[in-house]
Image (cartoon, rainbow, N blue to C red; front, side, top):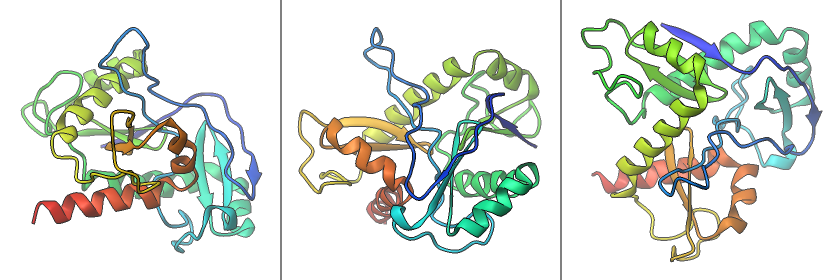
Length: 224
């Protein structure tokens, strides 16, 4: 079962460079365990309509829709999206969900802590912008709709705690620098990311799917 959850505001903006987007799940300065996430960034390395592999960020077309970043291989594909965004989103949401289900890190519901796919029934999948969140039942989905920031914050903490202990890289995925005491952590597409300093965050946001894939590849290799 799958639903899409996003803000009611709708803004479409096309440019040849990636625009600046708001952060989601931003860390609470009063909570030392809080960790931010960038759920608005486009998580796939291919065009969501044509399936074409995306090139460098400055060769793709970025679109902002309901606070979500989408990236297309050409102006023509972006224009197709603009003509019928609702139909296109069904395809996009399906692709993002299928991609993130494969590596979703939790076996339990982030709200109730019950087992996913257990006695509560079929798993309820929802996208928070471009990020998959999985619930054990519709009641937990309702909790999410009432207070998505809390659920996302809890999910950020759970993912960080789970993946921090066996993070596969000793160097910054962006700059190649050794990770030291100034390293910064955040979550992207339910994956922990560590960069050498806050200065690398903007660079990560320009090509998040490429950097995230490097971390995922290193994690898979470490498990062999």
